[in-house]
Structure formats: C-alpha cells, structure tokens
Length: 268
Image 1 (tube, rainbow, N blue to C red):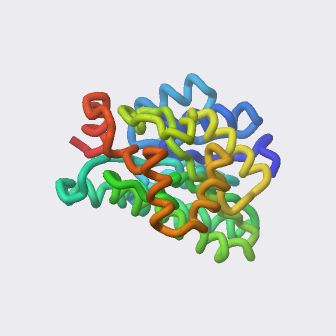
Image 2 (spheres, helix red, strand yellow; image 1 turned 45 degrees about the horizontal axis):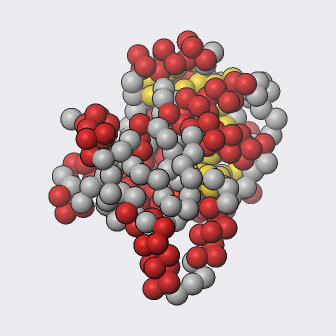
C-alpha cells in the first residue's frame, strides 16, 4: 500500500508509540487522525505534527461509533496502538486494575476491528495493524495480566487475518520489546536485547503497512531469537532467561520512577 493520500487512524496517538507513528505516517504523505481519551493532549499533538485529533475511548463501542462518524470518510489503515502496562504481583493486583488492562489492551483492539473492519470489507481493501508486545509471545513474571492481554491480541490478530484476507483486508500484529516511553519507566534493559525507541516501532509499522506481514518484532532480530529458543527444552529456555535476566525485567525495576505512570494507568 502506498501511503500518500491514505487516511490512517491511530489510537492512543497523543503520546509515545502512537505519536511517533503518526509523525512517520505524515512524513510518508498519509493523512492521520489520532484518537485518544486525553483530547486536550491529543489536540496539542495533532496541532504540532499536522494531524487531526478526535476523542476516543477504545473500551467503549459507542465511542468508537462516534469516532468513525466524526472521521466522516473511509479509513484505509487502522493502527490499534492504545494500551496500558500496570506492573506488579498478580495476587496483589486490584480486580479493577486487572479488568482495566483487558478492557484497554484486548477489548480496545477488538472494538476497533468491529467498528472499522466492516467498512474495509465492504470496499474490499484495508489494513489493520495491532500493536501487541513481545510478552504476547514470551510472558514475563510480574506482568501476568499484561502478558495475557497481549497474548490475546496476538491470537485475535492471527484469527482475524484468516477471516478478513479473503475480503481484501490484511491484519498484522507488531511485537515490540522494551520501548523507551513512559510505559517502560523504571524498567532495566535486558542483557541481550537492546531497548528501542517509539520511532523504531513506528518505522516497523510503516514497513508493515507498505509490505504486509502477519507479525513483525521490534527489534526485528528478536523474532529469530524467540523462534530458535522455543525449539529448546523448557529447562534450557528458563536457564537462558536467567542468564539474560529476561525473567527479571518486570521484577527488578525502579518503582519510584513508575509512580506517575502507574497512577495514570490504574485510573487513580
């Protein structure tokens, strides 16, 4: 798909990966609408980068309907990016936080597909890009609910790709590792996998829109690492994770650096 002149909707576009993706899309000639619950922040971002901002609560199907109506024309590409990442011991995690994680990360994606895909199917073209996470394939202790919500996005994306491809609509899933945004505040780097920036993720999203693939990892090389590692016995996988300290990413963190983000993500 050539992006020049295409209309792309990006959820959670007021900051982080969403903002970086919107900037990259506009640089490629696309017209961009960003949807976000924080409309004031979204409007500031949109004014700065040359996009259009609209209010959107991804957890609410009615809000999605209002968003699509407000856009007022066919959406060529939907980037389901909105997400939250509260971290902590599951047994101490409040029930309302667990539900919120799934409402935003999982149902937010499902709602977006239900709202936008019918128009794409009717036109016989379109592309849905769902931003998941590497923990959607490699679960991490300390982030059980987050891992599960992203596993769900991966499975949903794979199933919807098979459902929609015959209608001319493609579905891709993006699996970033640690991305240096507010979402990852306080997290330490994995020993063998370098952290990436929001712009790195945005670049991969643009590549995937141009040349659709079922899934793309950020950094790209991590996909091969995981594929090879998954062929090994479980005990060997666990030993590798310990050496790389991959099993400590959500456990060995600077909690003080996450105070502001955790409060916002948990809806305090």
